Structure formats: C-alpha cells, structure tokens
Length: 349
Length: 80
View 1 (tube, chains in turn yellow, orange):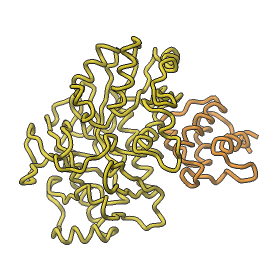
View 2 (cartoon, one colour):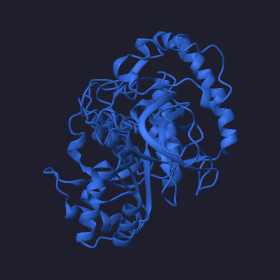
View 3 (cartoon, one colour):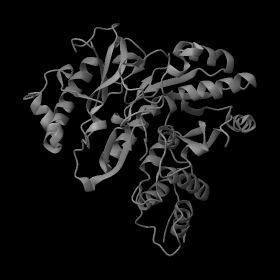
View 4 (cartoon, one colour):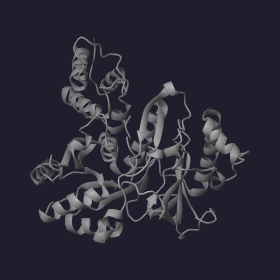
C-alpha cells in the first residue's frame, strides 16, 4: 500500500513533532494575544523537552474564546463545530492553512484510496448540501470528501429514504472496479448495510471511509468489530477505514489501518493518552483522555489540544503502519453532549 | 478560442453572467465558487475537455489560471 504520511517510527516522529510544535508554540504566542496570556499564566518559559511536555489547550476553549493567529483580513474561512447543545467552536483559517489542511487530508486518504478519484457513493441525501448558506456538520463533512470522488451518487432520496434502484444503477456501472463509499458511521449502518443485505447487493469492490462514533449503534450491539465482520460476511465489503478527527484540527485525521481495529496517526500528528487524575501519560493499554497534536494549525492555536474523548493506545510501532495505534472509547462522562457527526468539516481546497 | 471554452465552463458552473470577467477568479474568492460549485466545476471541465483529474489536481485547481495550467498538463492547448 502506497503511503507517504504513515512512515515515521515513534521515536523519530516525536523528535520531529517536538521541534515543529515548539516552533508553533512560539509562533502562536507571538501572533495570538489570548494564547500568549494563557502561556504566561501557565508559566511556560522554555521549549518542551518532549512532546508530552508541550502545553495543551482544552478543546472547549475554542467555544468561548476567539483564538486566531493571523490578521482579521487574512481569514478566508471560519469553520464551526456542530454541537447539539451550547456554544460552537469557531476555527479561523487563512489561505495557507486552508490549503495545507486540504492537501494533507488528501495525502492521508490517498494511502487507502490511491491518487485517482474513484466513483463515489455518499450515504446522505443531496439535500444535506442543499442550503449553501448554512451546512450542517454532516453536510460540511460530506462536502469535505467530495473532492476524493467523481460521478457522485447520493444514496438517500428527497424523503431521506435509500434509493435502491439508483444504488443498483450505480453498482451496475461502477461496482466491478474500486469505488469509494463515504458516510457517517450511524448512517452507513442504518441505510447502506440494511439495504445491501435486504437486496443482496455486492459491495466487494467498495472502499468505505466512515466516521462519527459508535454511541448511536450501541443499542444495536454494533461495535467496530461487529460492523466490519457483518459488512464483510453480508455484502463482501472488507476495505473499511474508520477515522477520528475534529474541526478544531481540521485536515488531520487518524485513520484505521487495513487490518482494522486501530487508528493510526499520520506523520504530522500524534495522540497522547492522559490519566484524567494525574494528567500523566497513560501506559499502553490503559484508557484515558485523548490529547491530539498536529502541525497543521498555523492560523489558530489548535496544535496541541486536550479533547473530551476517552481513548486507549494499543501498541507502538507494532502494527500495519508505524507509530501509535489507538481506539476511541467514547465521550468523557461529563463532557457536553455533542452531535454524532461532530468530526472534521470542510476539507476542501 | 479554446480559452473561451474554459471561460464558458467557468461561467456556466459558477453561474457568472457573460459580461463579467472570469480570468481572475480564485477559489473561495467569491460567493459563487464555494466547495459545492467546485464539485460541479471539476465535473464540467472533465466533460468539456475529456480529461480525468486526480485528487491532487482537484485540490490544486484554485484559480482560473491554475485550471488552465492543469489542462495544459493534460495536453489541452488553450491558446487565446
């Protein structure tokens, strides 16, 4: 499998990230006064000797504070998270950051999709991108992915029901060579899986990329393992890649490897699992709070963030790709309830 | 003449009136050229010039001028 962003063994990655992220800490301190005040208050005075010692911000801060590191007139996009309750995060991108995030997302996904744009089945209705003034998080997520496909087919009709005949037509035309399927995990299971089973459709040439969490599927006793197993047995679909990402680190996605069960970090990003009591790094196999690190956020200080998600590292440099491999276990119990589709948005040039 | 074909594709996909120039357009530089319009624009360019763009090129296609360069890479001659 061709990849150019899943290459660095953990020790090499940590050295590279430490240096690049220390430089980003300095950059944001110079360019974002509220961030500088937080660093001053935390008494951050010198470069962190290891990635684990880099100062983090709670991801929630982007809901309450305007954190931006470029002049106002340089901002070309403001992204917002969904959030079913309360405030939304606001993420400011300048031209350089917008361009970098879409390029790096493309390079990450090219690892499993290849460089060619594949015929694409989107497990949504076209209406999800209908209102150009305000997309839902799901609409923005779908739009962020359309660049990776061609001949887009939207699975749901205007009433939100799967259009079986149109799906058959898509598969007749494209189903005998690799094609891309994108959707949110819950939608993919509720609509595509059920319809494919019921009508005996062959998805064996599909490559599924999905995200959004398992909470809504818990009452159907479907977890990642069961999802993969049943898609494989019942529809022939085996190339399945879950991913984890958030709008506060747009362009960075942690991608499930070919064998499934673990998410991997691209070379420009990493995760650290922290004990929620001591905030020390948790050992492999011990669950804790997920901190995400990425060198992509240059126009806003989102380079080191403590999320409100629980996760666990399964191993380091021992899987399909180098580096840490991990799983997301769910939301922190006291975290604000957010939409299941509250993942990255945008992902466009 | 060929360049006029590309201008026409841009005008149709981005719903830009005939009297307005398109040569200086940039992605996200105007309300018309957003990510949804980008999808239609790419499809229209591919149909009109019978090319197939890779993901990198779709992302790189950030201005009228870039579109011209990308098409030239595909062997489409766009003399004015």
